Length: 113
Length: 112
Image (cartoon, rainbow over all chains, first blue to last red; front, top):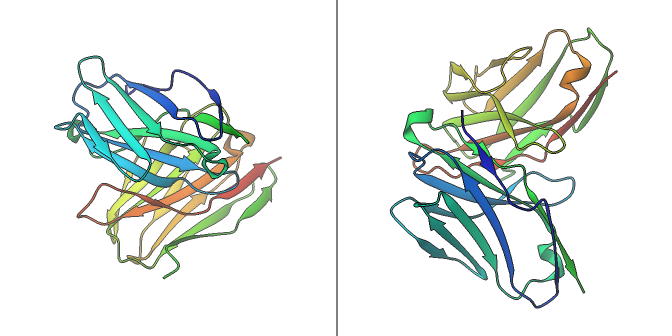
């Protein structure tokens, strides 16, 4: 079966520092990856995505890196702000899973003012 | 444009009772999904639908049924609730043109 996991369940950073959240996956056929942010009491919110034909994709203050060799992706948040405090999930899908998404367990990011 | 909405927001059931969770989206999305979220675990797919009148099983379908009679609505039913079904349930939808899912605010269900 699928296995999508995160290296660290919690992460604390100082406001203004950069944050890096990691995610590992096991399906070498995975071809699409998404990072979601979930604030307390709310549903997951899309942050950024990347396809398997790319190694890096940048958004506003966020960057996703994909290393297909070791089946690892990361989310980098630049100049972390208190509003970034949330749980972050990675999710992956592939054609051979019928477009079903598999989610990681999540990393809780706390930004210290 | 309300996006994805879920009804109710909270519910407490006794073991053996039945209930239906309603998901509605006003974005004309083809795909709709039901997930459950439990502490220490990622979102797990219960059932999904690729269009009106069609449904399919996900990773953890046992104990649940779904229906998609209208494109904008996706109903999740529990015929005989069990304490193991205590969870937060999320609905999501996406258009056929993209893989990005849009989530509702969730329904917190407790089964006593």
